[in-house]
Image 1 (spheres, rainbow, N blue to C red):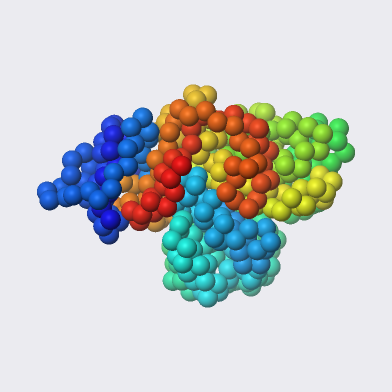
Image 2: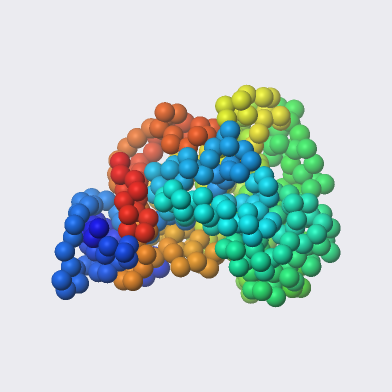
Length: 425
């Protein structure tokens, strides 16, 4: 089916487009015209995007569909459906599934399951070490050939520095990107909240800022030694931002992202043991939050992700320290980013770049842009509609969110994947 997206404001940071333009999509799902239709083009269907913004489909660097292994929490079908309902056309799945994504067969299975439903694309991240145990290296070359867009040990620390060095050397030899969750495991310990006044008052075991900065310091030394291309996941502290900024100034091949919730919440939002605010790394101080926001403007942090972790209700009913960490974040990724625009922390074009072209560049995938010849992965959203998040609005199986009851301005109205309309509000 050929398609005409009419009257929308096209924002495509990768191609430096920010103006009212129509889009024309052929029956194979490719963009064949911008502004005016090519000769002989006839649209079978028209989407009226008047007063809406048309942009590349959102790319989420980290979301857990919970399948395989934890299907009682969520499935690939349910979470890809939630993704497209949120304007997300592509997301990365970390390797901490069961079984772990440490073989080509597992990487291919997840991709094939996503293709079967024809909704959002899932790009797997392969495990750096077998079983994420931090001991034996995985076959990184085979994982790369099987479609993994990067390698990570997720939240499972590689304690042995020599193993980490060998992993980076291996990845560098094949020009692969390593995704690092830098935390010192001994300083992190059994902590569940930022080490500060709130954790002290509530009697919660704390995770100091040094747990992150010590981990980043080690990893930066190894990056400089090996020359590997590295991406730091979910920075949470002001000092971590400064360290990554200094590494970038020195020319090290490093990028970084931040989760949407770390840009809007602090340790004070824990209140009286609100388990919906139990996340790792923990919510930190107001100063840290402000520094993370500043890093978006300076370009030190180049992407915002959801770190989507859907849970069943019981997972958040335990005492704070015993509850499972994580937020169901797909549905709030775009609204929370738009909130930064309304607060004048970033421009609309920069906000869209943080969700589209920048993540695509980090992953080295052909996505996040809408030039002629590009695949029509498209998000259309109304930036002015006011709404309040309620539990019954979640498409995801996970309803665990501290943002329930928050008022937002702007949400996705249409999502296209490969030129096919997969969601319409």
